[in-house]
Image 1: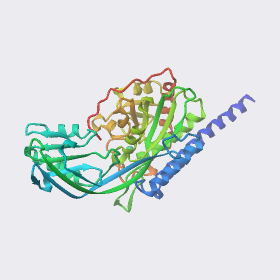
Image 2: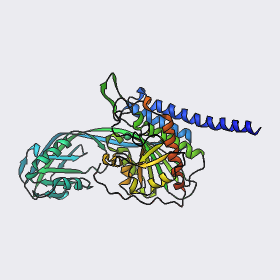
Image 3: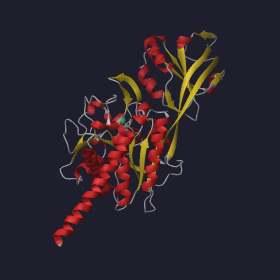
Image 4: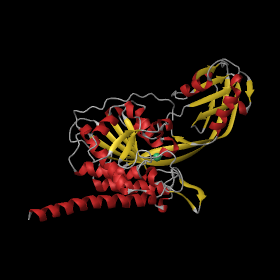
Length: 428
Ligand SMILES: [Zn+2]
C-alpha cells in the first residue's frame, strides 16, 4: 500500500513538472514563431506579443499597476528629422555644417541668448568628456566649440543628424552646438523646423502585491522586443529572438506562476517584459522614470538562458556585475537546485552588465543584475538563426528554478539587499 502511494505521489509530482515544462515549451514556440516576425519595436507583431503576455499575467492572477492600462505601460518614442535650420550668431550667419541642434520640438525660434545656459569648449578642453557630461543636463543650452575640435565636431554632427528613435521627452528642451571661436553670445537668431515621427511601444508589467503593508518591491524582468526582419541568410530573414530574449520572457512568466502559487513572498513583486531594449534600453528607462524608485529594492533581469553556456557547461548560469552588490553571492550560496551553480560573469570585458535593462536601475543605486547563459562567440546572437530549435528546455527550467529558490529567502521583510556600488560610465 505504502509502495502504491509512493508511486502515485511520484507520478503526480512528475506530471506537475511535466505540465510546467510543456507550458514553457509552448510559450517559447509562440514567442519565437515566424508569425511574430522577430518582434520588432513599433511593429503590430510586437503589440500582439504584448497582448499575449498581458493575457498570461491575467491568467496567473497578477494585478495591473495603476500606471499601466491592462498591464500595458506606454513608452513613447520619437525620431527627429531636421527639415530646416538657420543661425545668426553675434551678427554672423553660420553655415549649416557648423552647427546642429538636438531636441524634440517640431519647430522653434531662439532670439534671446539669456534663455539658454552657455558652455564654451576652448581649444584645450577635452571635448568628448565635456560632451558626455553636458548632454545629461535637463535644460536648454548652447555650446560654443573651438574650431580646434573640427574633426570631432563633424563626427558628432554626422551622428546626430541621422534620425534615430529616442524616448519622448516631455520637457522639450533643446541644445545648440556651434563650431565657432566666439566665447560669448551677444545676440542670436536661431530657427529650426523638424519633422517628428512618433512610435508607441509597451512594457508589459504585472504585480504580485505584498501581503504586508510595507512598500518594498522586487523586479523580475526580461525584454520581449527583438530585431524583426534582417538581411536574408539561406532563405531566412526573420530574427526570431528565441534565446534573445524569449527565453527570459518565459522565465518571468514561470516565476510569476511559481511565486503566486506557492508560499507568498513578503515583499511585492513586479514581473516585467520590457520593450525597446534593443533600441537603447528605452522600456526600462521609461519604467524607472515612472516608478517611485525608493520602493524598488532589487532587480533580477533574465537575458538569454536558452541553452548552456559553452565555458561554464550545463547546470550553471552567471550573474553580471557579480561583485557590485551582495545579491549575486547570496544567490550563488542559496541555490537549492541540485548540482546547479551561479558564477560571476566570465566575460566582464564584453560589458554585459551595461548592455541590458538591469543597468538602467543600477544607475539609481538599486542592486540590479542580469542572469544569463549567453556564450561569447555565439553565432546565433542577433542573427536570423536564433531559433526555437536551438533551445534546451530542461536547461531553461533549471535556471528558472534556481532563480526562484535562490532569491526567495531575500523576499523576507527582514532581508535588505543594500545598494549597488556602481557609477554610470556613459549615458546609454
Ligand atoms: Zn537581449
